[in-house]
Length: 270
Image 1: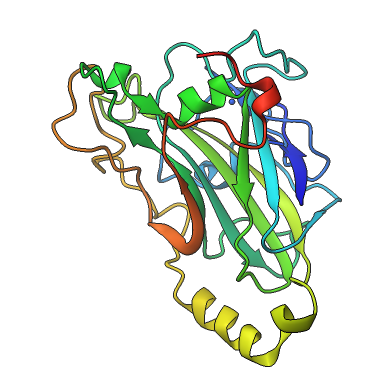
Image 2 (image 1 turned 90 degrees about the vertical axis):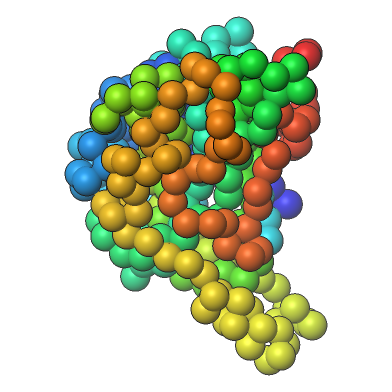
C-alpha cells in the first residue's frame, strides 16, 4: 500500500519535491519559506530548513508501506516538463526519520536515523562526475517523485520524516554544497495483526530497531566530509559516499540510475 506526502519545494503525498527547489503540497509538511539552500551544516536550519514551523496535522502511515516524496523548483509547478531540481544540481537524495513524542511540536533536536538513500553510481560511459548517475537525476527523471518505503520495524508513534536533496555543483569550495530539505509530521500505526504482531515478532522488531545508527542535526555532517566538500566536475577518484550514517538494516538503498518504481507513468523516456 502506498500513501503520498508532498511539500512546495518539498512535499509528502505521503509526496516530496526540490535547482533551487522545495519539497511540496502536503498538509503534514513543514513548508520551506523559499527555495534558497542551506549551506551551513552547523546551523539548526539543517534540521528542517530555515524558518519552517510545525503544522497542526500529521500524516498517518503504517510500517512496511511506502510514501512518495515529491520535489519541485517552484510552488504549484508540478509539471514534468520542468526539472524537479534544475541547473545541473547533481547529488544524493537521503531520507531520515526521528521518533518524537509529538510530531506537531518536535523541533528536530532528537536522534535521527537514515531510512532511504539514492546516492551515486558511475556512468558506463565514464567521464566526469557530472556524467554519473545521481539521486537528483532520478528525481528529475521521475517528475520529482521518489518512493520511500517505511521500515517495517518501526514502533508505533509520532515521527518526523526529513527529506533531503544535496546539490554538489559548487561543492569544491567550503560551504559550497547546497542542502534542500524539509520535515514531514507522521503518525506511524501498528504493523498489523496475526503472526506479524506476535510476541516473537514484536521482540524481533525491537531488536532490529535497537541496532539503528542515529545522529543529531546539526552534528551529522561536517563541512569537510568527503561527500560534502568535493569536485564532481572531474572523474571521481573513488566511489562517492553520501554524508551521514548508513541506511538502517530494514531501510532502502536505491541504485542511482535505476528505473523508476511506483511512478512509471510520470517517468520520462530515456
